[in-house]
Amino acid sequence: MPRDPAVPPPVAAWALAAALALGLCGRAAAEEERRAPAPPMLPSYKTECAACHVAYPPGMLPAASWQHLMTRLPNHFGTDASLDPEVVRSLSTWLSANAATGRRAQEAPPEDRITRSAWFVRQHDEVPAAVWKRPSIKSASNCAACHTGADQGDFNEHRVRIPR
Image 1 (tube, rainbow, N blue to C red):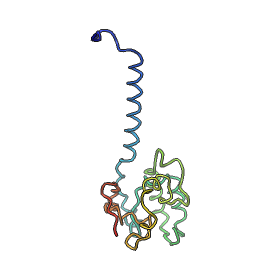
Image 2: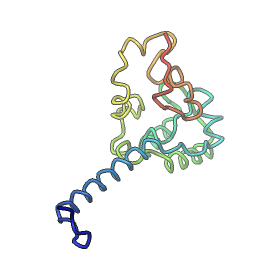
Image 3: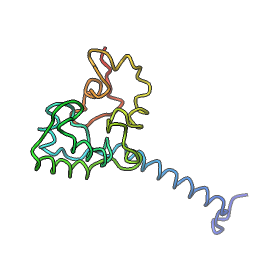
Image 4: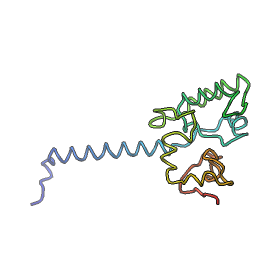
């Protein structure tokens, strides 16, 4: 027998619809967080930091990690990356303002290394350790070896090309 349109559906159906909608919204928000475009590159970040390595998007680390890294530039992973104090202030402000949010911001990775963060490990768990050691890659921190758009902030897994 068809349902009378004047009679509202049972409460259980409404509850199910609401639960599904909330679940989809949460999932969409999580996907949006992963797909959020990188902020416009600060020119001094590109000239100073990208001169030596990929200009890692600020959203790859929480603000606390960026602040920690910026205070230790004289010994930046074994290299003296000292900068003018005004440049350090400017970069620190920009990095913190655009740092990771959500799950990525919950915990600073060991040694503030992007490659040791939980999300990085999860995203690269299918990459055998031997791949990172290939002469064409050298280490997990060499994003541009496989992510050919890394210098533009593009880390889309569908465009990954793992060199031999």
